[in-house]
Length: 365
Image 1 (cartoon, rainbow, N blue to C red):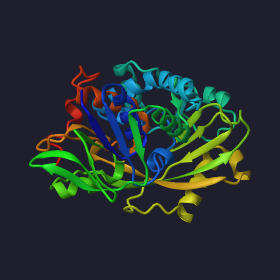
Image 2 (cartoon, one colour; image 1 turned 180 degrees about the horizontal axis):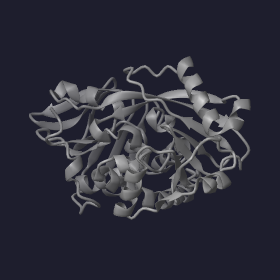
Image 3 (cartoon, rainbow, N blue to C red; image 1 turned 45 degrees about the vertical axis):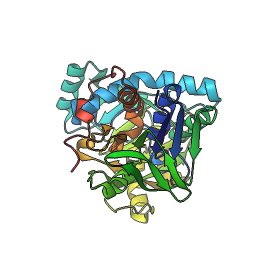
């Protein structure tokens, strides 16, 4: 049995990696430079589907399908063990006036997913608050959203209850300790933490941490801004998406509108321009929101990666160093499958899906 695994980065990917390893590892130590789950995991919308799943590679699709099928039982398990409900809320999703509708429908047939074209009248009947002027709709039943801040809270509570898991918040990693080409731990302001295996789950900051080892990981911060409204609980019965913007209903009537895509480095400052753009999209989708004032406006940093394909596996040339990062816009979507696949690889089990597309080898410089 592996004695000690150190996980660097406490977003949903890091938390769920720790959760999946805990039963088979003597000690798991999770370090985060701030508080766990407060970066992109907190900031995202939580749709349990890529926004346009047909535009992604089969490798992303494989992770997404596994996760979508697994999320309800993950939510139920966390609620039962912690009392904190991640609120996996199944509403279905309408896409409106897509330019590549034919490609979407062909993908659905090929992948066996319940997505189909519906009369626009059906969309308006199902979502009476939808704005006027849309002419075409496709719909996928069974698509859920997860309330990501509550998912973080429930995962943290589950880990705190495990005697062999230690969470070290406000514990920034300054480097890796090594013996030759083997990674033997991490360096922090409070000293070295020894490890048999070190796992990098640091999202947009993962590349910075690898650079001192002479490795270039093409994961960069991509800023996303969102706004939040509070409406009646039955205001929006389904998620809707048009012109790259979406509206997500929570069970209690909160409505999220997102999101922007901005390459501004590590700047997370919400901007007035984005606020006005998001409000305009909100009113176009749901005109009743013209009379509402946003109750929240924030920004987060996604870990942008080529083609949105995460890095999952051991780093070649550095024994004991592993990656589970670079999920771009789909970290919450892909987390259950990514973390299960990662645990399978580290523990030497039969992997849930073919791990080859995600392997760091050949994709790092």
